[in-house]
Image 1 (spheres, rainbow, N blue to C red):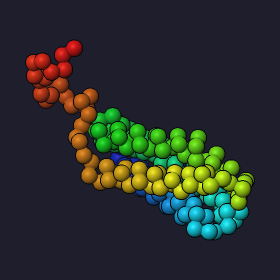
Image 2: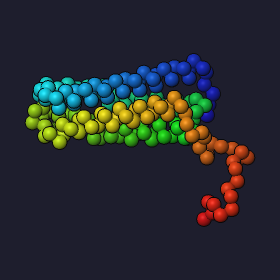
Image 3: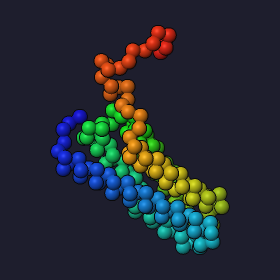
Image 4: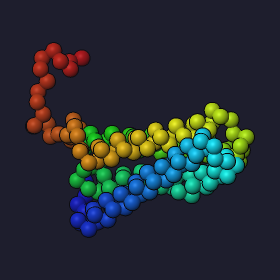
Length: 171
């Protein structure tokens, strides 16, 4: 890990918070639009808006959040593989970015093109996906706040590791 100045760390943290909050806010907008259609709003009006929000905000913010998070982890004392909570957050965010780019975005574009012709099952997917995504972002926020589980085995110096009792871990 390289030493970074406090102002650089604060700038990275601020950028990470702004992109993450933007991603969460955009996710809530998509959830709201999906619920609006299920409650009777005109899909021909709502789905093109959802597709636009997804393309212009949601996808770029998801990628930016991931990139800034990785850079922050690499340039701050937390490290990328040093603490379990950082590793879990990285895994959650990586899975979410992949799902956003390869599943949700094509569905949003299709919904924008089809409007009212979008099948009911696909309409439900446009509510379920942002609901799951919002939940995972809340989990990531809790991990960032409470920082549970301590260091990874790799990050703990060998001298401070407890020896493995006989019969355990032996292959």
